[in-house]
Image (cartoon, rainbow, N blue to C red):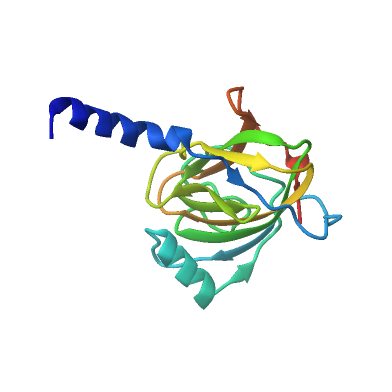
Length: 187
């Protein structure tokens, strides 16, 4: 293969994700009239290092938790409890509810997380990180919201060691992404 052909192939591989169509979200049907916040179930394994370990812990020993007010949980100090759980480290959580989009359009979604997350909105995976990190962002995902309203939200999350955080940011494609207010979430 010539150098030019190899360069074209590399550029195409790099550019392909940027040119991909946005993920089309499916609204809740029927549209709910949810209570504020998000439902959460916790598990407290001896250790959790991956999303699969978090999912297994939640299957083996789930415990209902105090609902989350939304997805704006700032980076904690070491030793502070994770979200609304009863401990700081080795916490697995399944978060469920709805997120409201005020208008149809194309949006960019990003999560800040410490540690792992598999976030799904309207049937599409919009956030993924399977490992340990400080409070840092996931890859920004572009979504198509076909209509204003409530969309199902399902998140698998785990916190391993140190501090914890969980945030959701959203904004119109090409614009500024802002923290999602607690009022945008329902259960």
